[in-house]
Length: 216
Image (cartoon, rainbow, N blue to C red; front, side):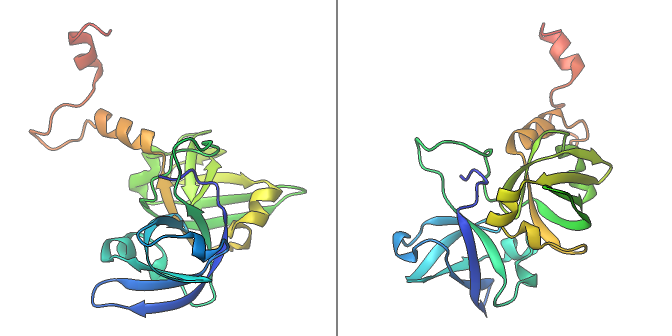
């Protein structure tokens, strides 16, 4: 579990194809010697497991499922990535609950610098649009952000100067692709309220169900 508060930016030092998946080697922005084998790290929003540590580098294995859902197939040696170590019990939750399980890929449709903030508009897969609400939370390449507005399959966010400087998001250009993780609470609520569930999967939580059980 993560918070979406990026600890630093790392650099891809190696990309090696495996029989299944990919081995990713990073120069980390925090001391790699502090990592332990098997530790989870959010790399551009995707939860990966450390499989080798040779300070200042750490290596991770990217599964075929992760490759299919994220931007890792587009990455090159030298690319920068956002890094966050997993949340510890007792830590402050400064962003929002982020699992590191990417839901889909977004595309930058507009980049508009302002006097202080950077305005970004993203297009998302249509299937994810019902999980985005105005003033709700979303993780973009592992960065916890607040949705300013949403319409159809697009949404906008603003980056304050600190976020722009501390992450890779300020370098995004129109057409660039990013990893998106929707708010986990919204995903569970959507699942419960899904009226389009296959026959036999249950009716979900509907006004009729609530009325029958005395909640309405």
